[in-house]
Length: 446
Ligand code: UDX
Image 1 (cartoon, rainbow, N blue to C red):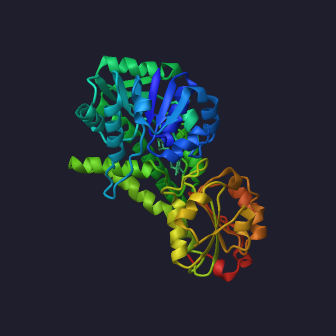
Image 2 (tube, protein in one colour):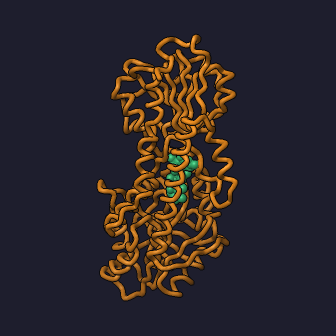
Image 3 (cartoon, rainbow, N blue to C red):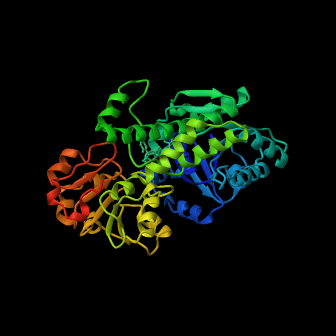
């Protein structure tokens, strides 16, 4: 099939590369000429393992252009995958969706199906169809379908090629038939429904995962109070197929471009219906306090951060991405800087993005050793493999005082104990060598 993809951001690019891999001809269009030029040279403007290789492998079936007419004129299916950023009130900014839809309306010259893949509020696909008809230049038949995606950063290609389901929100058998021609080569299960329900599937799924994380984080907090171990508790829960083991990793909260935004957008939608989404509200509040939980723990060891050497390992909102949007590390670093700490960070790929937020205030280190050397405290915010594989004994060897606060449970309690470090993690017992071995400022004040 001839497919056009509007928007070469995360979702658009991964979708395009995977559709090309399955044999479709895909024309990607974006108004950002720099990104287009980069892609024309076979380079990916985003960091995603395997993406550049997939683009190069399928370059004969992929076209990159800034010209909507060139991409859309003769396309059978046009996928809208532009960004839908968040507004300050939690609502979704649909400006790019309207711009893309208008360009499509003015350039298509044959009957086609337009699939909205961007995450959009319930009811948007209906509006997009009306909008396209208002701006249509040629008397062609255009049907809009809602076709949300569920890919995660870092595993986006696998998540697309082996997706758990293809959700199609269609209003006619014709649109369903066309969309199935797009996805049949993937051999994946379909959920076919109306447009509004398809749009809701996306929000309800993402927000459910956010709820699951906040729930396990609250149970972790309780585990700490009663002396239980969250890892074992989560394992025991996860074996129940009704619960499932995924998204039960306790930590310092979720970040990224989806969960924080989608929880707010769903609450905003409910507000508009005069309905209070209590569980979602609670999950958001738990996440906010969870993000700075390690700071609170650190305060039980030190009375202030002023002048302290603080190592920060991991900046991105999760491993496998350079994305630092809404990453818990940001909220923590902001507190540390405000209170006068000297912050030294290490992250394998996130430091370039962090330099835009903290250009001069923090020291960027090229190795973990460099970041932790002579530190008074070390915070871990992302479970990168390099951090997990770091020899715990090195904290004892390199730090001024080996106080490690781990927001992602990277190490076993046994290894921390053996290394003789003070180790605080999430939902597990504190590891602390005999207090007479500690300098007085590091003896827990509570
Ligand atoms: C998410 C959804 O998983 C995906 O389906 C959707 O399309 C986009 O949003 P993503 O934001 O890329 O994907 O990352 P994800 O792996 O879901 O992690 C989100 C956040 O939750 C991260 O900060 C991660 O550290 C945190 N998380 C995840 C936990 O704290 N515990 C877990 O058990 C799982």
